[in-house]
Length: 300
Image 1 (tube, rainbow, N blue to C red):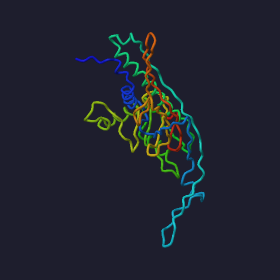
Image 2 (cartoon, one colour):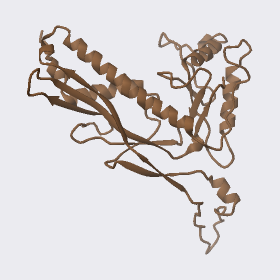
Image 3 (cartoon, one colour):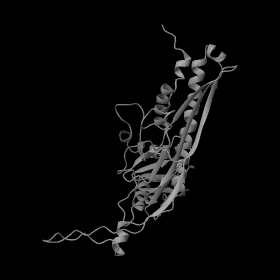
Image 4 (cartoon, rainbow, N blue to C red):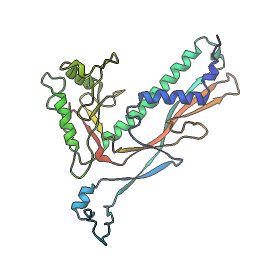
């Protein structure tokens, strides 16, 4: 049997693929918000806080005209959009091994352990940043809570989710909650509520575990880490992504087109001949559609 050289594991292109795959499994919002690559240090974006319904009501945008002979279509007139700016911020880790460590029997395990720790830390920050962005958003939505705490015997989480969904729909916008993010305790309270009424609703014949089903169009997620407190909830309408991520991928340290991370390797030329792996990201978040983002504390 051929023995794997630990130095091969630390090749940047190989590590980059492994790290990106691991990150995809731990990112709470993976694929839900668009990401734009940029070489700039900052970015400017428009934040749309006026609906088409408001513009029509305020005679800024005309109602569509009937198409008659010799008639022309009305040109779209829109209220002024608000422009904001942001900066990209870098974060990450470095992993360091001496030449002597590569002779240890457990070096492969040590490399895997260090990479897993780095992946967890970077993805946790990305998750936290997105939750914190949703927490801070100011919009026209009046989020509602449950009738009683979900830990209560009188709780009806299904009805509460419908009310949360209903409150997210506001006049003049096509937005409505379709993804709900819960604290681990609340997620399992909801799961317990559902399976005590009909185990077949949450249990698939094709796998051993149970999972909360789509509830009237709302997908329910258990956050990977506790970015929100027990009793809070966050939500989005993924059809209209409210956040856009801007990221920098260094062409010298990144090869994956839609990757999320940069990986650099530095070989020391003096004793103890350290091999250093740098794992880092640079990103900034722009809130473009605030009325598609929902958050309420002490709600359920």
